[in-house]
Every structure is written in C-alpha cells, then in structure tokens.
Amino acid sequence: MYKVAIVILTCNAGREFANLLAEIARQSLPIDYKLVIDSTSADGTADVAGNHGWQVRIIPQAEFSHGGTRQMAVELLPDDIEIVVFLTQDVRLPDRYSLEKLVGAFADNQDNDQEAHVAAAYGRQVPHEGASIYDAVDREFNYPAVSRIKSMADSRELGIKTAFLSDSFAAYRVQDLLKIGGFPKINICEDMYVAGRLLLAGKRIAYVAEATARHSHEPKLKDMWCRYREMGRFQKENPWIGESFGRASGEGRKLVRYQVGRIYKEKGIAGVLKLLAFDIVKFAAYKLG
Image 1 (cartoon, one colour):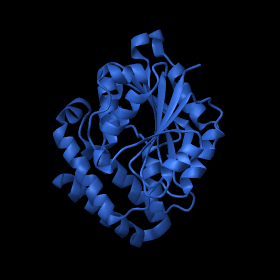
Image 2 (cartoon, rainbow, N blue to C red):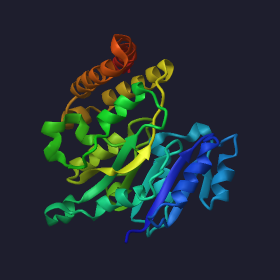
Image 3 (cartoon, rainbow, N blue to C red):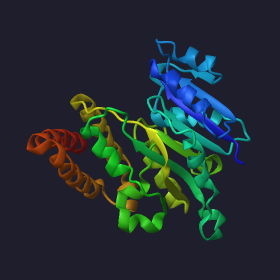
C-alpha cells in the first residue's frame, strides 16, 4: 500500500469546499497526509480546511503560481509520502472509490520494466450536474470512457495529446516528479510541462477513465481570452513540447469538429454559431499569446 498525500490549492473556495472535504473523508483510499495551501482567502476557506483536519499553509496571493505553489506543496510533504494527489478546489468526488482507482494506476509496470513505470495518472472529468453543453463537449472530447497508458511511443498517434494531463484531478509518483526537477514556477500548463518531462524521461502516464471527478466551468469570453492567451505564450516559451510531441493546432481542429457535430444535434445552427464565437476568441487569444 502506498503512502498517499492529497494537496488542494485554494483561494476563496466558497461554500461548496466543505462538501468536497466531506467527500474526500468518505473515500475508500486511506490518506496519510492532507494539505491545503491557501492564498489568503477572505471567506474562511483556511478555517474550513483546518476544522476538517487538514494541514494548512497560508501564502500571500502575490506569491501564488500554479506550478510554483504545487512544487512548494511537494517540498512540504513528509519524506515517506510516495504518491501525491492534486485536486482543485472546485472538483467534486461523489464516487467514494475515485481516489482508490486513480492511485491504483501506479501498481502497473508494463513489460516488467521498472524504469518505464507509470509516473503520473489522471482521472476522467465529467461536467457538474446542470452544466451546459458548451462546457460538456470539451470534457467529453478530452476525457473519453476508455482508459489508456501513454508513453513516448504514442506520440506519433496522439501528438501533443500524449502529454495531456490535468492537475484538477491527478496523481504523481513523488520520486519521479523530483527526478525531473518538479513543477516549474509557471502559472499555466504546469501539468503538461511535467507530463512531457516524465515521458521524455521514459516514464508513462495513465489515463484512468474509471476514476471520475465532477469538474466544469461555464464558458465566459473574458476568462477564455486570458486563459488561451497564456496557453499560447506557454507554447512559445516551451518549444520543446511542440518539437517532441507535435503542435496543438491539429488537436484543436479535431476538437472543433467534434464540438460542431455534437452541438448541432442538440442546439442546431444557432448553437453552432455560438460555439464558433467561443472558438474564434480562443484561437485569436492563443495566437496572440
């Protein structure tokens, strides 16, 4: 049995946060260490975590970054922790076996090759109840119903999707994470960065479709613009990802084709036009990043 830690980065997590902590407490997987790093919330998030028995570290909001703060968390873990699970504050885990199924991916060692074992795993994200189709189609495309183990050998077929991973619901083997230098101090795509480094080091990434979490965001134009501009900037600053796995443009075209077909069936041409407006904003922001 692995020694497992869970880390959640928070900032004004809101009323639903206590429900997430309660769901984690009901999980079948024994958790050895639970850590919240809170960016000076004003709504009592840190107190909620402490009252649920979590370790809490409070940092100034100005010091937060998605990569740097996760690396801080890794460095705060007890020395005997073998697997660290990262969740975002807005996920939900209604299935009490989700974490057990996710961490179970690390028991796999394909071909009995100890150096090519699973170093990271991520689960299937399904939309929150009541989510619109405009968010649901992205989840359906990125998180299919079939599990898969990915290695560098899959890059010819999957392209940049080989290095796809989401820290909203993901786990890492700590020793492998540290060997590649951990998370970089960046504010977006830290999960893809680490996944790429692990794959290039000969490790494998597990997608565990049986491990599910509810997670979705309704599309907002301003948020899309900011996020995709940062994603475009990330790709330009890390050309090794495109050189190693392929460019993001091909995967983007596949997503648009899937979105159009799916939304047309439910919303008709009006729905497709709304979707294309979202996609134009994403594309422009990405190119300007």
